[in-house]
Amino acid sequence: MAKRNIGHILLTIFGFILVAIFAAPVLILLINSFKSLKNIYLNVLSIPNGDTFIISNYPEAFERLDFLKSFSNSLVITVLSTAFILIFSSMAAWVLVRAKTKISKVIFMILACSMLIPFQCVMLPLVKFMDTLHMMNRPGLVFMYIGFGTSLSVMLFHGYIKHIPLELEEAAKIDGCNMFQTFFRIVFPMLKTILVTVAILNIMWIWNDFLLPSLVINKTGWQTLPLKTFLFFGQFSKKWDLATAGLVLCMLPIVVFYMTCQKHIIKGVTDGAVKS
Image (tube, rainbow, N blue to C red):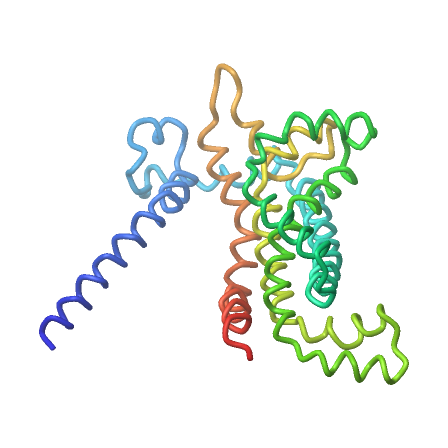
């Protein structure tokens, strides 16, 4: 019993250390967003008090970011990309599960292997190819996000759909449903839990992505929030006071969204693992 208690205490201490390590960058970002540039350079770890505490960074960062415009750009791109990923990936996974052929196994293996390829390896050929198609714009960016998000999403849907009873789909076919009616009326509603999980995972990385939009979007007024924050960093100056406030504004919507929906991630993965 004593060894068990000691082990529990050590695990608790280890957990607190991990929380401190992961929370420290966010806390440093937050406290520096309420300080002037001079005070940030003097002591980046100091907590702002009555003399050093300022809040003017936020309205100025809000204006410099053109926050509402950038927010709407990020929102439209993220929502459209995620919606298409959910529909296409779930349909593809359903077909791959039900069609037990060699071709379906090969396609599934290709999708699984594609997750091992780093984005940097396909970055330049992709940009050149999309430029040839005249799709270096927001629709092109959505198209690329669908491609990059499909493989992992298909994997998650594939594991979940395997546990859906085939008899339900056969009963729908007997009642006269065609393939699309069977999927959207029977299968798709049963994917609610994993749909939320896949949606959250894709929204998180698409919203925070900087590299792909920086390669594709080069027109004023089209920039997403992560792209706009880069404007605070020039060749000869770095406005850390405005940048920290801007970064807090950028991550605030996605943090609120994640805190609201994070329980569905665990629920979706758990349901997919234990469903029989």
